[in-house]
Amino acid sequence: MTGMLKASSNAAAANLRMVCIWIIFAKTMKRLSDNPAYLYLFFFPFYVIFSIMLKTLLHDYLESACSTVAASFEQLQHPTRRQKAIHQLRVGSKKIRALLALAQQIPGYHLKKGKYLTTLKILQQIGGISRDTQLQEQSLTRHEKTVSWRFSVAHLLLKTKLTTVDTTLESLSQQLSIKKLTTLPKAFKAAIADIEDETAIAVMTEHVAKQYRHIFLPDSKAPDTVWHDLRKNTKRLYYQLSIITQLPHHTHRHRQQLQHTKKTGNLLGQWHDASELLLFIKNTATKVKKEKTGLSDNVSKLIHELQRETTEKLADSAKRIHMLTNSAD
Image (tube, rainbow, N blue to C red; front, side, top):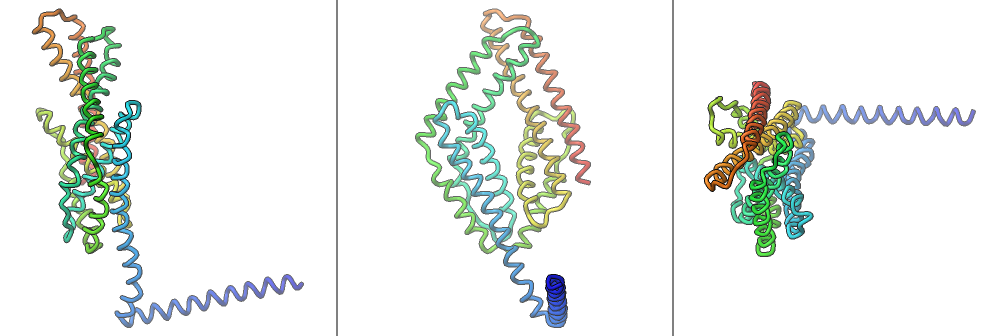
């Protein structure tokens, strides 16, 4: 009986507390509605918290990308870890550039980024050559199986190129420094310290929306350079959308656009790899013919196989771009 009375008393006390809370809440909202000054005081702490969230999010995104690049840079001297390090370095670099391009749209933001990215630009370019060369040899080996023939001269050229590039990378990693890059997050934090948060979010989301609307399916006769530019722009937009989808104001539409740009970028990347290998094999075959050292008829079969894959990858990319442009309406 005593236990029942105690439980009943606790329940009554809990109900009384809830009633008191509701009374206080009702009076607070009445006071807020009657006096704008109270309204400002009530919501100001939430504004401050939101402001800190935005600046922290942007700063942490940049700091994470810079840390990835710094860690990858230290691994370039190790042959067994080099290709993974190159991949991470390139991804980190793209994230950094995407964020800085997005932040550049914000009123009141001023940061001279060039001095921070000089070394990174060099590493990204040479690392890209290393990455493309290794992928080309892997892809060439796969396609050679379909024609039952090995293009030995092409493999020799690719191996020589990869050795030269990797030696250059190893040497540069000993001569260059990325200390300046590691100071970028601090400089960026200072550059966004006084930005107006609502305005910043508005201009960033509008910029991304504008870039998304400007993606279009190239003409069937468009040169490869148009497709290459589209690939780069789509990849940059993907990283910028990955930032937008972390903001409190993002929508389901932003998440859908993130997925569209990711899939489109991946397909365009596959087309780029296939087209670059096709061009390399064609050029190599032409050089071998000029030397009159003899060239198997199987090279024509190999080129035909590469042309088929390049065409298929381009068609897949075109379909995905069509879906992306439809989602922008």
